[in-house]
Length: 125
Image: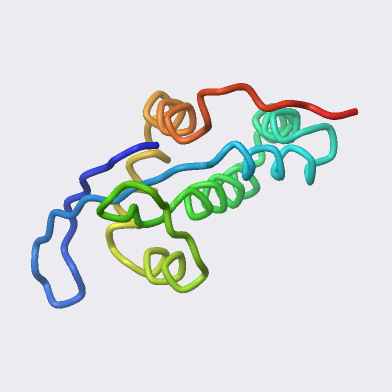
């Protein structure tokens, strides 16, 4: 899980600083891997090698949004749903984060590594 503080200017012109959380559970990672031909890692590698910036940005945007959620105060749940994801996707905070990660490959790699589960995913044949 990544906790990211993002500074941005909202649509009323107010400067804000908010904390956002991003996480991909082991189950979500396994589902991503199973739903991608050759596994999620291979799909990303092919896109990087193809140098197709449009496809890279589209997949990275999907990845960031799929990782976004809200952690409950007691830390027992990480809530993700279409409403939360859409609200975040339409915010200037998302724009700031996406531009920051899109302009720095090291930050983007650290974000992906931080969001993915630390425990290995059991692969099934």
